[in-house]
Amino acid sequence: MPGAGPGLRERKKLATKQALALAAMQLAVQRGLENVRVEDITDAVNVSRRTFTNYFSCKEEAIASLNAARFTQAVEALRDRPAGEPLAESLAEVFAAEHEAATQLGPERIAQIRMMMTSPALQGEALKTMVQAEGPLAKVIAERTGADPQSDLRPHVLAAAVMA
Image (cartoon, rainbow, N blue to C red):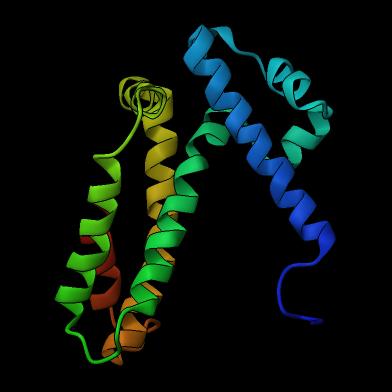
């Protein structure tokens, strides 16, 4: 069905971006972040450096981008909650499910998270990713509460608190 989803080109771009991010993470866990060059990442995915820079400014940004998908899923899960459900309950359910999923992580994912939490460069990029996720979350909060996200700061403040 035309218009039902992203076209082939967009899907290929998303797959390339994801492959670069995953390769960056895997190489950094294996070798240590400081021992990974952008060229190592592009070689692993078989793309050019220019392709890498079309998506990311640095290897740390590529790695931190893996969290963006998780944040997008949380926003979509909030959007899918029943309309009559109180916002606090919806938020609790969505983020409790996130927490539950986190308790089921394997050793490889735990190593990735440990690296994200202990590297100052990755911490900075992870914070940027979280801040970028606040906008879409604030929009959904505004939709659910009937607030105007352009003039009412409450959805933005609540989104920032939730992300923190």
